[in-house]
Image 1 (tube, one colour):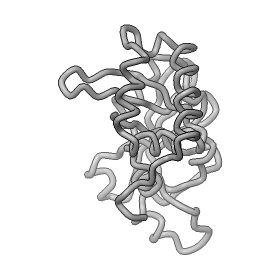
Image 2 (cartoon, rainbow, N blue to C red; image 1 turned 90 degrees about the horizontal axis):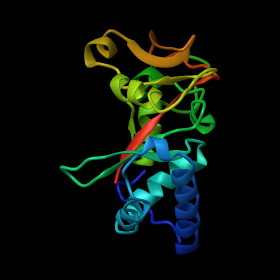
Image 3 (cartoon, rainbow, N blue to C red; image 1 turned 45 degrees about the horizontal axis):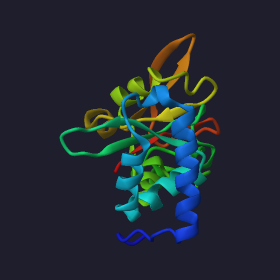
Image 4 (spheres, rainbow, N blue to C red; image 1 turned 120 degrees about the vertical axis):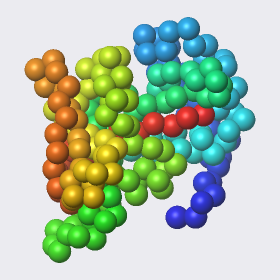
Length: 188
């Protein structure tokens, strides 16, 4: 994919903004003290970010504002779907893992999909922060950014929530499961 992200047509942008505004209003606990009008203004001046948010939306991520970085002025969106986004499951961790599989290769990897969408995978710490906003991944799991020393040895980490506890696990980076996807973030 080329480095220039396409812009959404005006009607599609307005539709997405409407969806995001409705979600923002329904989940005010995720962004106390943040005003939608300021978020919308920031989105309208960053068309390429709208494209990425739309990618998050169409793959089932249900992106929502979870923070405002007062130093940069950026608003931070996380995937807030109850379960790992459906359109991003059954994938291994990264391209190296995908290439290492000899048979039954998944269609893609979490790192490549995130890059193509213009987003980042959540880190373990960000995943834990998300879990403070609600109960996520009660039936699924999500790949998270894996420390280089773990990845160098062939592993990758993922998280889920079970028994009211956030668990961090490991697996070979080439593994993939129907119930494992990834959650992303976008700074606007």
